[in-house]
Image: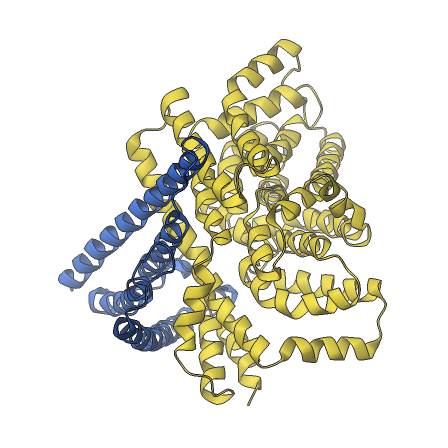
Length: 166
Length: 423
């Protein structure tokens, strides 16, 4: 139980830090590109694709952290209105369905990554391997599948969903 | 079996599944039961929707907004508004509205505006004789002006979805945003007179000049954003990134109230905020892709054409639809799913797509504080620990004001298009 909770905490801290570092890197690349264009009159052709690459990774890793914190936007009007027993059932159903959907996306994304690896496709200008770009979807959704499972393993019996306790 | 495309996300939304998963579930259901496209389309469309240079402005504006909200910059902007409105009955309410407009010109996020301005203004409003419900309603609703005052994340999302110009949409939102602020300001003054709220603060030229001097650097950020965009120096994405660097420089080296540790924390939290919004972009884009592939926009356009409604009737029906949808889902999802459906209809009715973008964003700005799904209300709720039963009654006058503002925004296109002629 403790191990699952500790693993979740360590992983989310790591992913959160990676998302923050990528955010600062994207801001730095953007600024460097603007300066290069107007000061040395030679913008970096790779800047745009690199920033987009960083943004996709921020989104996928960040979404996994949000899954772990159960902070995704949702309409919880029904969840807060029903009795606690029904609420627990609904939350369990939502979590299970979420795991199934994320797992489905992982399977599909792995196939796309395998296909891109075999063709060796790269981005047009920055020449970033496309399988590396799509790997963000695989990893992000794999973590989004893993965190609820770790949550179940580390949960106190009878614990409620944080969204509906407020 | 095409009904699964509609029923799946609606049912799951009601059951409290995260919104992006509702759209993914609807799309997967369509993939399994309705169409025969390859399943690899799921990651491809999701990836493609997030991998956009225009949308890259979203994380940069969120970062800048977070930076401004945490440091003393928001405080200086509020003090500037106090120096402007001090001495007028209802001045603190007017300061709340004015601060949201000014902060909106820096931040692209309505929720960030509510968090920054609301946190500062709510205790002061309560201490100075404003009612609890009114104060809660005011700080929750006025943050939505941010969506119309550029830079606006919702306008960027609409621009991507409808393939329209971000700079034109930005400038098109200025007059409707100011109209809304004016109407809310008039309501504040009426409330203050009606309930005898005492006059607070004192206006003086010296005080105003001092506050302007203190807030001068904060004002440089909108100057960089809009000056850069409209002079053709930057794209909106580049302007957002440069504004972020300026925000760091101002907070760290000029006002000296932001440490490197703060900047690191803001980068991480704005990264998560970006993910919270953009993962919905990924899910709803996939859903919108299925709607398009299945010919839903053409079917709806054909149906509306058969009704032979006049332009005002079509716009009225769309407004009603957007008000309902705005209260049920977040604006990003609403824009991404509805834009491909509605654009062919309004195009056929002769409505300018920049004007329509402003109509959509004005409607969905109201959705930010219209229950049951009201993001600004959730921010207020968590900040002040008050139940929604206290917030909702305070929101009703603002919902009425916002609905009234929709009439000129919808039926006077010049309000949205006048300024676009100058760029």
